[in-house]
Length: 150
Image (cartoon, rainbow, N blue to C red; front, side, top):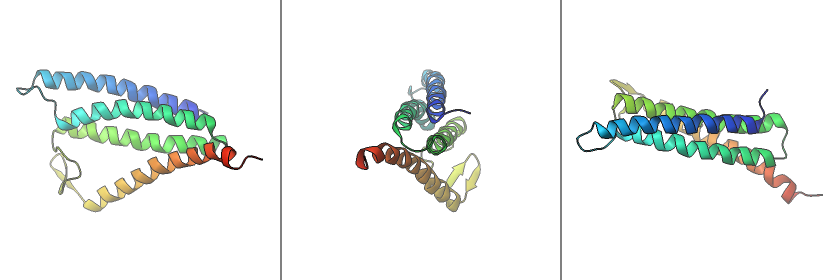
């Protein structure tokens, strides 16, 4: 079974590779565009994947320093990474479909389909809870020995 640090490092590597590959996609779009611009969500996908690679390193460092049990740390790392990945995947889908320049604008579009606003709201609340909650667990695990040292 992977440790929390290994999960975070794996996420880092996969997001960094995704950022590099989507950079090629972005470059090709820019070279083939009359205004030398990539579609909005191609650009967002590229930058976000790179940003999440470094966020995974932050998670790895706090997992190393956390006083919680290994399983708690593993979940606290895995949950945010799953939401990071779901966001990058959604940005890639919007980039491929070129269906919006703002995925939160109503009506919520996904290709030719319209997504229910409640679905988007539920996803965003879950994403916030997962990303912030996961980090808070790790941060609390870091603070525990500092604040409650014997």
